[in-house]
Image (cartoon, rainbow, N blue to C red; front, side, top):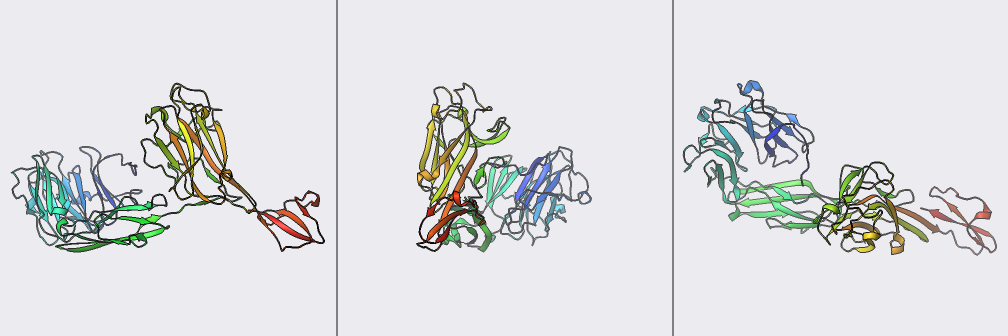
Length: 513
């Protein structure tokens, strides 16, 4: 799924994420045909942006020309831009076609030369691993230039005359340059053989005990027929690999570095990303003064550290006009009314919760509010499962469907809860032998193409009373109750809970933890 990170209120013509630092992103915008085009840069993954557009004094007019961007493979501050025409009838901008920056767009160097005169630029692409080599596509041909070259050279071997290059793509595995054009797609050997450029990628960067496996992917610029991969994963299993795309398991909370060295016939290159993998263990501990609560009121769903494993349908959040307290509220729900996946299940799983425990008495009460109308002839189900081994196995502690789940009579249309249609349910987890364990709770929605099911205010309230005896004695024993700060809860001797009669008197305490 995609998440919007910023709105420019303009169309976007080019997006480039820096290979060496993905928090650095460059964007070119297109506000309108004749409007001034802009270039922006972020260093925090898109949270904030600054305008780095080439100053108008360096462009000699025609500020409405759009930009195409390419970024260095090993330096997030080095980028090139081509000023592209939006029409073949545009006036030429000879001498102001291509620019480069080595400081993230603070200053710009003009790379245009008379060799490019008469050309309309269309796109620009860096060759990773090279010494600043870039390919420049135009409405007629392709050019190349690197840091050791004083000028651009035409690189159009076997291209038909007046071939309009629309997109240049280096295919490093085979050492080819792919040129998408108005005529067809063409390929040619890269202009020069360059050393590889290592690039680490992974399917997830944040993991936990339920998702402890990471699939690493090699995105290096490397020749396949002579490639050697050397991965190292401190803290992972395995701790090293020579596979192209290894799979690694982590089994303890922490932050883990990853290193990849790639070698081919033209050299080697190493990339290390510090703290790439973050294994979190967000266990909530129930105490007398700290109970677990999730009210789904934030904009994030599922809530932080909760999980919604992939399925044919899913739990979502929604704002309803009448929540449990008859006021507007954000709640979790499953839209069975529009889902026809009969018998399929969708899970909403909490983070880990450590239940309270006591030497003599402990209660851990799971409560939640829910609302459901059902739909005649379709009986959706709801089940609650508990895991004490981080999701490896699950035991069901509650289940209901159809009329046993309804809080109001059947409704023949898409239903929303009204004031008074909510119910509260309470389950004593201690009755299921759960006392002091670390658990995860899985709320399971079972589809029968019925009606919407709503849930809110998930809580686990713990009550812990531990008996801590003093030195044993045959004397008369007085037991008194104190709170966690040691304060006597009841001073009256006539209302003490227990008396053990014998000679003398020794006090023992019951601590409420």
